[in-house]
Image 1 (cartoon, rainbow, N blue to C red):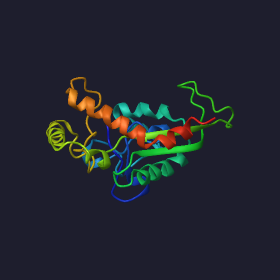
Image 2: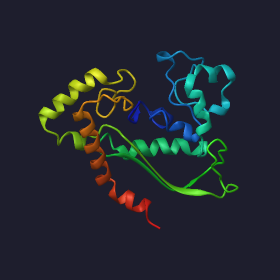
Image 3: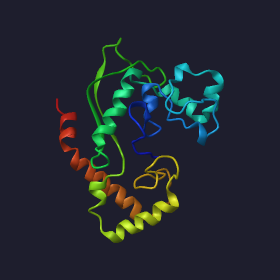
Image 4: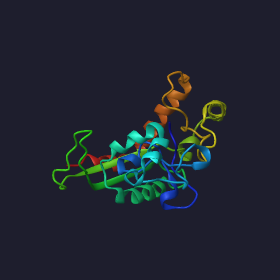
Length: 202
């Protein structure tokens, strides 16, 4: 599933895709009113602070606690930079860190080299991109709205009904949706060319 960065305030209220917070030791964004959970507070929670019942209530998401490879104290900065770089849906939401510390993770056989390992990290978070969308033919935009009306995850975020916020795991998406996703990806790569060049510099 796919969520775009959204914010009702700042900092830890910025909602990102469910697979990203566990990399920093946090749960996906929790909304108690929309799901059965013993966690009463909306937002992200550190896995290490949860008790057995709270972990069980997370369902399959409890297993994501094994995914941490970056320090938890880097997560708020990651959220803020992703949101700011998105520029109100006018730019791709990208995060580039020159020296991100890596933690030991025995589950994935990742070594921190005794705390000395740092990597250059870039994360691109798909989000509605108005600068791309506005260039599409009006007929294509109408067809997109019709498709998203049937397939979007309504109520999850304020932009749940906007492309590309739909279930990417489906295998029966129409050619138009797949082609537009490929086209959006190409546009994102073109716009982030300076960041990508920086990423692969020696």
